[in-house]
Length: 418
Image (cartoon, rainbow, N blue to C red; front, side, top):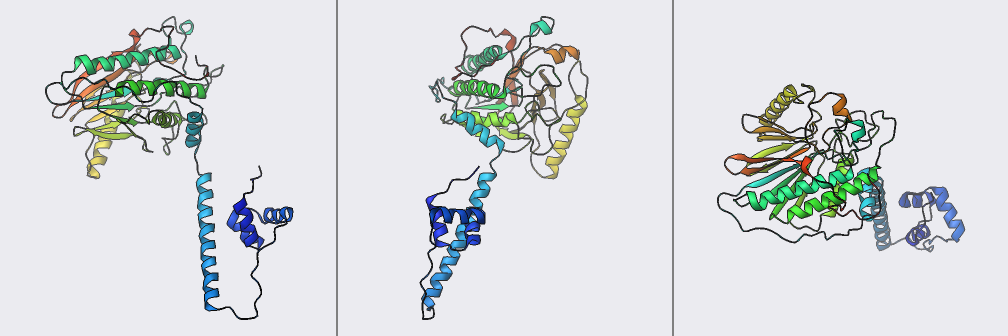
């Protein structure tokens, strides 16, 4: 495509008579510069001939002019480089954000109760493996499995109500902070695994539907705590379709991270919500002096398929991470948080525990064909005490959520998703 010409560029051509120099300054070809001169009959501005030799002042002005010309060329080159280095994630986020009208207020009304007694505790909430866009039909799972977008909305709302109920009615100590851990595979992605039919929901519909629903989920629970931190890690289901396995470099670059950036934009108006997005393959953070490490869990391979607990891989991860932290003189994690396996599990460690979060879909065709132990859709949250570490733990059983005709979250626009 031809790049349109601007008035400043025409002035550059007029003041730089040499086509090669003008091409360098403007980032165009000499042929384009020559053609532009001919079309507009641009006459270069040349210095008037002088019989007298140039004075010191004239030479100084000329040198200054050369300097600023070089500065212009350098800045122009850097500007063009920045434009060309925009990655796919940035463009996707901008495209969806611009086409995503809000039909709900981005800032929630504050609904905090009075502080309770005792030492304050923070709440850590895990949200992973929602697989928005996946469709599990009872006709293909022996009548046992069912999952679709309305089911996701109902289960997300059930989880929201459970969090609010625990904050308001079950906790008798102050909760000054909530830490939300987005553990990956929030979208089902576009990995068809050789399926005969295509994916039931487009990536845009997955992205758009999950983004607005989870943004309202964040909006709702943020109203009940003074401060909310959000940490993220990318899953494996949301990798690019040409990647047979998750890459060891640039792991962050997949559809989960695009969704996180979109969510950050949708919740930018909520003052007590703070996001941490980066390129790390895992997220590390502290809560009351206890260190947590959040990762998706797809790197934990092997183990018994029926129980779904890769003990050897977990032992290697904990050992290697602790050794690395000791080598670099940084605190080792007390708690490891993962997802991926779609089953809730916790194992004690020397200083804390290894916690595996559940998933949203429940039984699906893959689990049925691999004879996995059937597990219920579950998500995990717990409290953290300044002295005792992880205390009250809640396994929220999402199977009790009821799908109703009225959707619990508003999805603006007209982008169908099953």
